[in-house]
Structures are given as C-alpha cells and as structure tokens.
Length: 457
Image 1 (cartoon, rainbow, N blue to C red):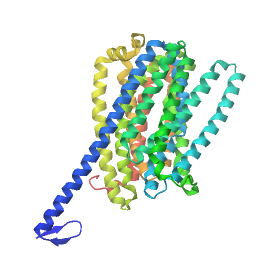
Image 2: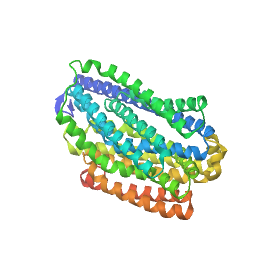
Image 3: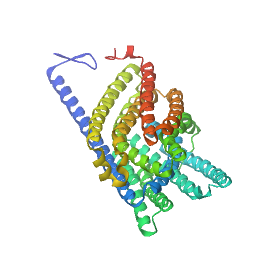
Image 4: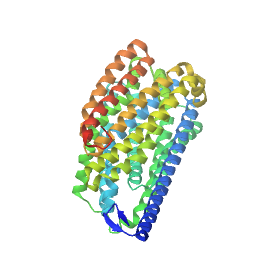
C-alpha cells in the first residue's frame, strides 16, 4: 500500500504506478515546454546581440568618434522616452496574461493604445518646448537631432510594449522576432542611407528612425493577426485596467527619469566638459563592454520573470517566497559566473576586441573595457534584485535608491571627469554600480522576511 502525498489517501500499487506515470508525463511536458521557451529566448537574444555588434562595427567604419558621439547623444535622447515610460512595458509584462486568462484582451489592447497615444502627445509637446529653448540658446543646429531622436523614442515604446505582451503570454518565438527586428533593421537602414545620401550624424539618425518605423509597422501587423480572434466584439474601455496599469507604471516614471541620468548622464557631462569626440570614444567602450552583460541580463530576465510572476496569484505567500528565492539564486549565480569569465577575457584581449568590433580609431582607451563591464555588471545585479519588489507589487521602494544613485553618479562624474577625463566616468560607473547593488540587496532582504523562507537562514 502507498500514500498519495497530495491527498494523503491510501492507494494500491496499480493506482500508485499510474500516479507516478502521470507525474513523469506532466513533468516531462513541463521540462520540454520550458526547454522550448529558453531555446527561443536564447536564439532571439543571440541574433539580436550579433545584430547590435555588427551594427556598431559597420557604423563606426563610417562615423568617426566626433560623428559617432553626436549619433550616440541622439540615441540617448530616444532612450529618455523609453526609460521614463518603461513602467508601462513592465505593467504589460506583469498583467497582460492575467487579464487574457479572464477573457479581457480587447480591454487591455484599448488601454495600451490609449497609453501610447498619451505618451505620444506629451512627447510631441515636449519636443516643441525643447526646440524653442534650443533656438533661444542659439543651439538650433541640434533641433533636427532632437526631433528625430524623440520620434525614435516614441516608436521604440510601441515596439517594447508589443514585445512585453509576447513575453507575458510566453509567446517566445514572437518575442524573439520582435527583439531581432529591433536590433537589426534600424542599423541596416542606417547603413543604407549613409551610403545612399552621405556620411553625417543627421543622416545616421534619420536612417535609424526609418528602420524603427518599419519595425513598428511590421510588429503591429503581426500583433493584430495574433489577437484578431480575441477581439471580435471590438475594443472596450476599462477604467479599472487603465488605472491599474497607471498605478503600477507611475513609480517607474519617478525612477525611470533618474535611471536615464544614471545611464546617459555621463555622456552629456563628457560632452559639456570635454567634447563630442570623447563622447564617441566612451560610448563605444560602454556599448562593447556592456553589450554582452546586457545580453545575458536580458536573457535571464525574459525567461525568469514570467515564471516568477506566474506564481504570485496562487495565494500561498510562503510558497511564493520560496519560489522567488529559488529562481533569484539561480538567476544571479548564472549571471555572476558568466560575468566573471567575460571580465577575464576582456583583461587579456581588450585591444583586439575593440579593433575587431569597431576600428583601430577607438582602441586608444581599450584598457578600460573590463572595468566598464564590472561596473555595468554590478548595476545589472542590482536591477535583478529589484525583481523582489516587483513581485510584491511594491516598485515604489526603489524610488529612493534610484534617485540617490543618480545624485551620486552626477556628483562623481562632475568630479572624476574633471580630474581624470574619460577614465573618471569609468570610476564613477564602478562605484555607483556597487552602491546600487548593495542598496537594492538590503531592500530585497527586508521584503523577503528571510526568517520565513525555507533554506534562507
């Protein structure tokens, strides 16, 4: 006689054997599906990563450090929109599948369209104000760069939200296609326009805008086909869903803007204290030294976040915490192991890597590559630890550390860049990265209540 551990029922051998076979079948199917998911995530991220690296290589063969510095500053303006509004993409990841299971896809799509319309209207007004200010300050040569960059940012938000929808419902193939298109097409169109028109920062940004627009159009078509059968009765507005998205996303706005200063403030300070050539050199270092780190971090986040969030609605908080801790340990252990290997490779071959992935023009400061990777790696671990607060629907707890880190970054950059030049920005990145990691770690420790989590003592 045997005991069914789920029901405590006494069962005979035949029933026990059937139960074991059923569990093996279910677990095998789960592992198979999980393997398929991670495969698509890996394929998408690898192709995306290759696209970014090839894009950098091609563009730096056309643009010198001065032009690339202006191109980089333009893309940083576009990133301001994506980072300040990133909470809506995160809310989509968090809630879309939950509401879909309740049959409320049409309500959500209407809400997302409304949100994107609001963002577009605000940013267009913001663009007009910025252009007027630039004219008053006699910086009108930046007008076209600002306009193009803000349009790239608006379209980028739409592409990101579509990608997060696929992540939420665990449509890994569509998510991978989304990220691959976003990585390859803008760079390819940029290279085409540079060859077809002329080599300049404005033409490069114009090509990137056109490429981003093509991605948005293609992804919108696929999105409509994917959910066409689920919105047969038309779109319905839901104030409750709208308010839930807004309430979840607003805290990201409060620390999304500081996050932008944290990520791109150093480039603008370098531009103000030094020149655009120095911006171009530093931007290449950050992209090459940081791209593999962001690549790894994104893979882990895309795969693990939906799995963690799937458990949050089940009601048993202790089980949920154990589940979260288990996946968080797996996540960070993998990240640190691969990061360590990559940093060793950079210490040994930093100049060769710069020359291969860009050009000899940018190799004069290649020795800073591993240190940049260490700083970005520390920052990414801190971001992964923030999964704890998101899991408990408490993103607000990260506002103070985010603002604090931004203030620290700005102060350190002003001081260090004045003293050491570009190298000073690297020192600032490393120090602020580790402070951010420790701060978020302490917040997560308090939220988890480790004394209640099995195996955490």
